[in-house]
Amino acid sequence: MMSFAPSDDKKISMVLASGNSHKYAEFVDFFKSFSGIELLYAGNFASSPGEIEESGLTYEANALIKARAWADFAGIPAIADDSGIEVRCLDWRPGVLSARAAPGDDAGRVAWLLDSMSGSSDRRACFAACLVIAAPLSNARLGRDYFSIEARCWGNVAYTPSGVCGFGYDPVFVPDGYDRTFSDLGPGVKSKISHRGIAVQGVAQILPDMLKYFSTCDKLRASSDEEGY
Image (cartoon, rainbow, N blue to C red; front, side, top):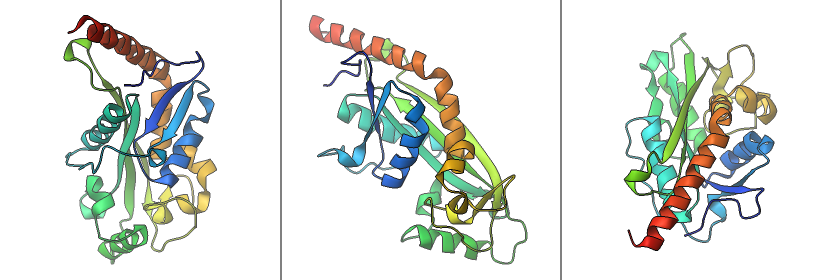
């Protein structure tokens, strides 16, 4: 198992538990100010933990399932998120089911959403995200093995898609304070105001202490292994 203590005293490796290249690019932009973090892309690994079933009932539960699976597989901390769009006129659905709300691709799910909202003038909605950073599963006596932050970005659903940037429901989500969709606004603006961007800002506050804690647990686990526990 790899150690996640920095080998060169400069970088700590962390894997993004996602095969979505658009999401990876977004997270690289989020973490570019963290000079001590090397963010690896799950899609570049020669193998994977296999199919990960997102069976949780909350964003945190699903993000934790993915983060733990990749942390245990890679032997280094893993970061994962689960997110969704919550629409008031749909009783705050689809929520955690956003990525599986309709078969097909992102365009198909956007079409499903707009069709579901057809005839409603209430376009109020929010993007929600939970970001989880997990360490490789250690002996329970070593303490907590993950940290999480949840955030929301409020806005409204447009009547028609617009823009070419982003992914998911970005072409129809207009954040508060703007008159254009996330897809129109582009990654520079989105990274600062989106649900994931807000969550990353929260993670930034605790990241140094979190990684120091994970590193301490890693050393304790290695010591326990050497002693035969």
